[in-house]
Image (cartoon, rainbow, N blue to C red; front, side, top):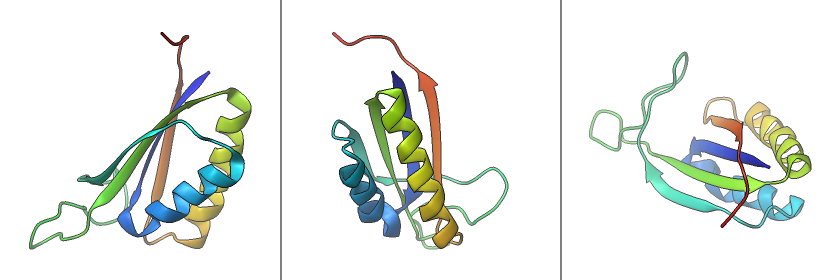
Length: 97
């Protein structure tokens, strides 16, 4: 099992959700308004007068196959929208309660 954390520009939130739906990734928790700044490129997304944009975030616990397929879809989405930005991070997780 994998935990997949996705951060994206708010403008891409619906497209990320559509990727998840298309691939059958059903379980997730999301935050529609989060702030942040990338490590290397892009502008901060702080929701203030200087940096008005915001990000959205999603975490999903899924099996390995769905994780890899979703990562591939997110890479394609990022390639089509390099100025907006999509980042995803994954790690191994144990069972559920």
